[in-house]
Image (tube, rainbow, N blue to C red; front, top):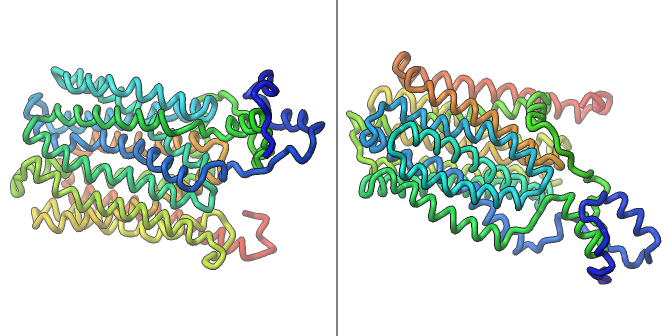
Length: 476
């Protein structure tokens, strides 16, 4: 394979347009030009390694959010605050993720993935130290909100990088593995948070996040290259005289208004599935955040370490749901399993399993209100966690296939809406539960999830019908 030396390419701008570089190569010997897909530049083993590290980014964001949830009773006692204030600390964290994700999505799509993620890590670690030394709830609020702002960069970068390196036919499985790690961190955080809180106090949970963050940061810097597709295309053309197959499909990035990704939420081909993810995410987080304070009181009266163990089935369910949902998402796109040619078909398996979310919500809400055996509560958690995990990979794969060049932005828009709505609901959850109790609260959430599922199913069914009718196919 002929390679162009660094001296020959020394005066070539790396950020040049692929099209302009192609024009310069016209005079070269055609045999020197090599064709390669951008999805094939990494070996399978290298992709697996990159996916593992990217998945650790997602796991870190979840671990940071969840690790002190079993410690909420200890936080309430130590800082002498109410349950409502403890839940507000969670809401502020999610609000920070929501509001900052739009900015990070825009910067990641313009400047690239690696430098922004490196900055995010460097700024994130001091906020953990701030939480550890917080003398009161106000200082804790400030550092917790800053943590949310910075961890969202790490999360969006991981999702965007997966879209950079995995072909659409493999992306559902990749996202399934990513979210398996993402939700598996709930499993680890539940145990670690409960044990640390009971033996060393709630502050020790942030020390554990600091140690993990340093390890993940070093791994990311040493192993993960820049994967932004435009930059990779230009690098291959400038330095290796290789024209990637996607060169004419990727245009130079533009620095845009950070609120511009919100326009994706108005796309009628996107918004039905956004509602599915948002409703499921709210239910998942409300059940998780309310569980620890509720079962620490009679008739349950569990200690922090026991609460962490009780959350394990929930974590295992959402982990397995993510893996199975991702595999099914890619499987239905295979020729032998295809029901139609529309891209939304990869959403169907997850949408079917999403029906478990309203069922589990009702079981959980009325069980905890009635004070029945904790195993029934856990059954409800398992059902809604599995359904929520199974629906996510297919929908996110569909997003990034539809908007490949703006993968980080579409993910940031989705994160913005689901984190914003969840932060608001969690902040109000305790007050709402005091008025209508857990049974009706989770029933309302169940109805919202069911309506979102029906709406999305109708849209997909209509598109399938149109795709099989040649006379109406132009309406798609």
